[in-house]
Amino acid sequence: METNQQQPTTTNNRKGILLVNLGSPNSTSVEDVKNYLDEFLMDEKVIDYRWIFRALLVQGIILKTRPKKSAEAYKTVWTDQGSPLIVISKNLQKELQKLVDVPVGLGMRYAEPSIKTGIQELVDQGITNITLFPLYPQYAMSTTETVIDKAEEVRKKFFPDVKINYVEPFYDREIYINSLAESIQEKLPADFDLLQFSYHGVPERHIYKTDPTKTCNMNNCCQKEDNPSHKFCYRHQCYKVTELVCEKLGIPKEKALVTFQSRLGKDKWMEPYTDATLESLGKKGIKKLAIVCPAFVSDCLETLEEISEEGKEIFLHGGGERFDYIPCLNEKESWVQVVKTLCEEKLNDFYFH
Image 1 (cartoon, rainbow, N blue to C red):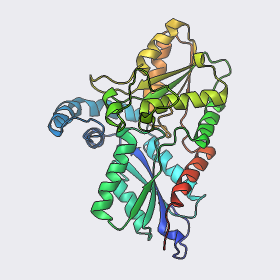
Image 2: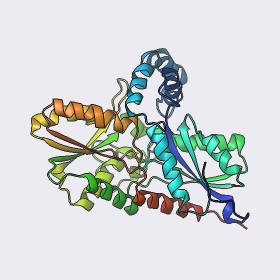
Image 3: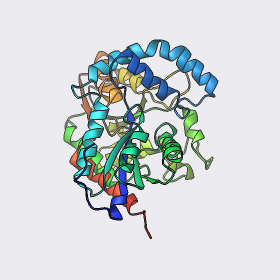
C-alpha cells in the first residue's frame, strides 16, 4: 500500500480511512473463482437461507457448475494488472491518498485484500480511529450491511481498541449526483433514444427484511416523495438516483428506464429485469440505447461482461442498432473529490481529549 511519507505522531495521525469494495477472485483459475464464490454466496446477507439450506444450494449445487462458467467470464475482462475491480479500487486509493493527510487503506468484503488486512495495515501505522467507506451508493443488506457486520466482527475479534465509524449511503448527496451526472453526460450520445439505468438486483424479500420501520410496500411507496422506509430501501434509492440524475441532465422521464440485473436462482427478484428488457427494446422501436450501472462505482464483471458484452449482444440481436455502455465513476477526479468529502465529514466526528 502506498501512503504519504511518515509524519510525526499527532492526534490527526491516529485517524485513517479504509475504502471497502466487493472483492474479486485472486485469478481466473476455476479453483480461485470457486473459493471466491464460496465465500461470497455463503454470506447469509447475500443468500439469506438457514445455513444448512444455504450450504446445500451453494456447495451442493452452484459450486458444482458455476465456477467454470464464471472463470471464463472473468477471462474476458481480466487485465494485465489483474481484476478490473481490484485495479480500479487501488487506483482510487492512490488518488485519494494524494488529497488527504491521513493514511488510506483498502479492503474487500470477499477475498483479498480482506477487511482484516486493510485494518491491520492502518493499525501498523498507529491508526486507532478508522473511517470506513463502503463503496456502495445505495443501502442494501448484501452490500453496505454485510460490510459493516464483517468490519465489526473483525474489530471485536482482532482490534478491540480500534474505533470505526462508517460513511452512510450517499445515493442522494448532491456532490455524488453531480459527479455521476457529469460522467454520464460525457459519454451520452446526443441522439440516444433511451438511457437505461441498470442496477444490481436483490430478492424482493431483502427489501422488506432491511426495513425496521415496517412501512415499505413496493407496490406504492418507492417513488413517493417521502416514506420512513426510504433510508433502508434499496429499490427506492435506485429510483431516486435515476430521478436526480435525469433532473440534473434535463432528461425527460420517457427517455429513462430503471431495470435490475444479475439475479440468481428462482426466487422473486426486483423487476423489471435488465436482460429481458434489453431483449424487448428493439421490438418497441428503441434503436439507439445508452446504459449505465449506478449501483457500482467501479467497473467489474457485472458491468464489463454482463452489460457491456452480453447486454450489447442481447440488445442488437433483438433489433437494436447502437449500444453505448457508459463506464462507472472508477477514478474520475470528481468522484475522488466526492470520496474525500464524505470521508472527511466522518473523520471530523472523531474527537480526542
